[in-house]
Length: 304
Image (cartoon, rainbow, N blue to C red):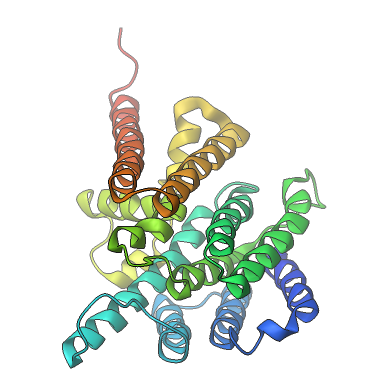
């Protein structure tokens, strides 16, 4: 039986960190309730297998808890249509990143290690902008993931996997931090900070979805949720010859590069921020071209 209880192990470490810093709990209660629902949903899915419809509805409910009782995107004039659009955009963000992290959990150490990197960069900017409550939350999450990683990297029967419960829990927490944290600070360009930090899972979700639609593999959101194949970012890196561990390290360095760009966006001028965003876009443009070329080369076979 595949050991898929890594999510519970991370959650236990996460709760232990919160117990030490329990003065934070009231302020982040919507995130804690929503993430607990996502964890339970993932556990049930790991044990019994739930339909795409059920997963989507429960994820929507958990996301609504954060959006209604926590915070949401604030970028439009106060009006009924502005509020509605902001709620929809916030829910799309939470659901997208939550499932993107589930997509990312395809190689040992990839999702948990990426969560450590993402948490470090989120935490750094939150500390620099005096958002100390969310900063401590990032430290707790990074510590819980670091405690789990050695068991995920182990070989043999003692190895433990995240499962859907762990990967979706990590995605939900990080998506909520990206949503609730105040990044713009009077400069709308800085709203790109959470997008850059979470650039790898976002790119994987968008690129994989576009390729699946183009190839006629999915047509509805339910097909998107339940479709599973080895066609994600990390799978393509393995196919390109990087190997399992090499692909994980490559993605780690990509996440670090994007995190540094996010720091530049936070600390730099508007022009520097725009250039950093452009740099991040070029990185994924190059990676996307290499993946497509690699797929075409694989289909055509070796040339004589």
